[in-house]
Length: 535
Image 1 (cartoon, rainbow, N blue to C red):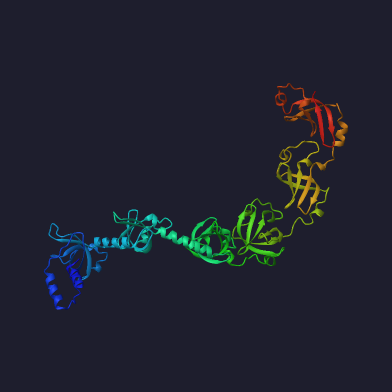
Image 2 (image 1 turned 120 degrees about the vertical axis):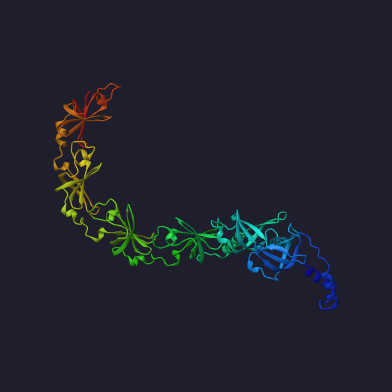
């Protein structure tokens, strides 16, 4: 305590008027009394001089106290005659100087204020003023430590952004022996969020329009902070139109208005919608796009089975690959269309409940299959070219876009054909017989063997039971061998009709092309089969 501060204290105790004669006499007397100061004591004084990097403070002692300019946060605060509280560090150092400290006085008075007025769990305001290892220092009247982990609800990548900012903090630790205080902003934010969450869950209702902050973006949707509770805005509820990723519409940090679609208060799950804020474009769609109507649209997506066409924002139709062309065979829609193309199509079907529209391109042209049954009548002979071979037959092109199928069973009366490629070649020109015409399903059945008469009635008369025959082996199987006994006429010698030792295999005893003798044991006119025996 300074001499001046002591003087007024004593006058107050005496209850005297400062202007009285006695007061003046007392004052003169008091000035002669030496002041007793203790090191570590906080003293009120005033700034009386500034020399270089040092400040001189009158503390009512035989000489002024000295402190350095860097003890002031702002040098502009250093003014002559300004009052100041300092802590007496040394009454006389090796140079005979009185050393005082403003920072230590501030810290001591701040500490006393904190421990007298606050406890752990209380809230206090402070200003973040410098960065240290592991966190930040906060000025709350003295330096308090704020760990980086307690700065926010989520991890902070750049703590420098908080320097110079003032926040509310929670006191989480007071270490009296060390005079340390640890703060947390995160605990306060958690508490505030929980309070906001409880308040929000009481207020929120299905159908409400609420504002929220975009917190996180995933492939499947966006998480929106509604003010203490997160809601999910699924990608399918963002737009009536097509979007590939939520980031096409929103960014983290955006504030958007959403509609509450559903609430599960027990699990605190909230479903949100953005497109539901406007009417569905599918309302009255049957009047806009009736079946049979020609429309124009833009190709917005291509998949192996077709192309999606945008008719208007939020309304798409599918052109299935089978509806691209009457005559052209298409392996992939990209052979015809590309994303961004404007196409004309016909509405084939509407499924309003499932929001689906079936479209067709080929329907914009005449169907070449119309009237095909009158052009290709059953039993007539026509010429064509083998366009494609499959395991079950051959497709023959009769004219541009019109194919017929020769099934493997209609290729030969007598020869057993396992693979059509062994009998016909791609590109081969040949004559065929029209068997059936299915105009509605765009199918024509053709026959090759029907160009000649069925020989099996004569075969049945010619080959009688026990008749000896000679021929050459055409095929060896696990169950027997096939023997050609006449031109393209084969019989089967079952393995049970061959004299073969138990340890031997057919391929060990016979080879394709070998001549063998056998006898007829069965002729099946209906199944077109001849059974032979070599026993």
